[in-house]
Image (cartoon, rainbow, N blue to C red):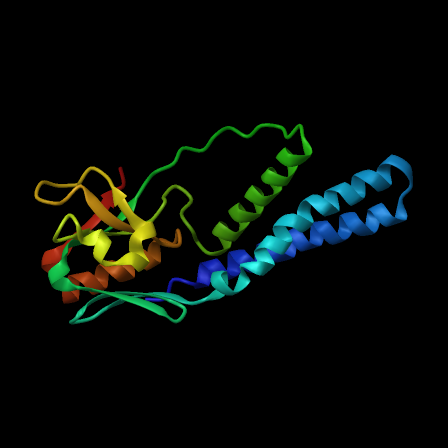
Length: 208
């Protein structure tokens, strides 16, 4: 199951958005005089910083990400890197979600607030184009058969979390692997688990 499509679209939209603002602000600043010139160049510089950071991390953002379920276990692939978790090392698998309440919009009063509001609005448009649910933070929740399994898989150490188990008999630790906020991806994982490992499938669970 590929996970990279929404990341690619959002990354390209952010590049166009941030780059466009930086370019327009720089062009306007160079044509203006006095304080307007300073303001325009300052805005261009502010947006140039995240643009450079995004360009530097572009290969990582665009590398394909996949979750593969087969008879051997659960594989997580990111570019050329691959990690296999054999089924005997996995107690259960679920797709977690966390509902988030929307905060009331406030009028931006500073240049930083304007920047944050613009980026947030762009992300909303990208979510709508991709049929994304912004009310959920989706993650592939993998519960280990042994509570100390995290040390044996160093590549997945950033995803090792402590949290209250969703049901009795499961450990209080898990690998929580973020998924794009597209419910269809969670459904495809659910379909694969029901076929390959139905006894280990927890279903959709609320992330604590």
